[in-house]
Image (cartoon, rainbow, N blue to C red; front, side, top):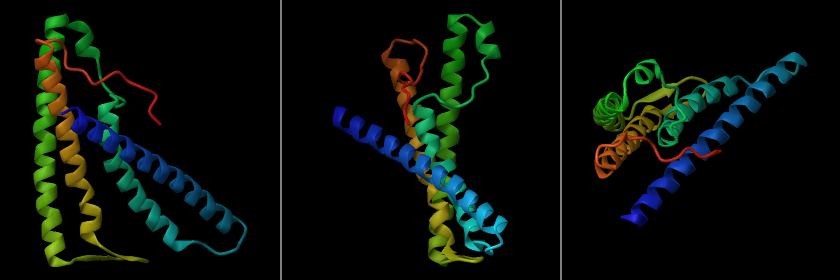
Length: 173
């Protein structure tokens, strides 16, 4: 179990690094497009399309990493008002809802990806790509986030009802 946990952690870290590198590429790509246009050298028409696809990939690749590190935005107004028992109940509800929603995202994302693969649909813009390549990110991300919510619930049960939180936040990337 410990080895599986280390593989899972390494996978999420790798996805976080890939997302960060893609985001850096987006920044450099947009900068290059602006410089090329601004200097009158023409344009890089394919760059906008690559940036669009990269932003989609960044979102779905980074989401499990962000959840693991509790680096997402959270609204804690209600959590601050209730006591420790209320916080435990809210955390149980939030993590259970997250698990269910991510499992549904996984299921429908997988169905859509399989259907697009079978139909061999393509997106025709400046570049031509298979549509399922983009959709494949959805079930992967949904599954990994469902696993992370499940881990949070497992840690909560293992801690005898203490608040299910993510592992301690590190600086990550």
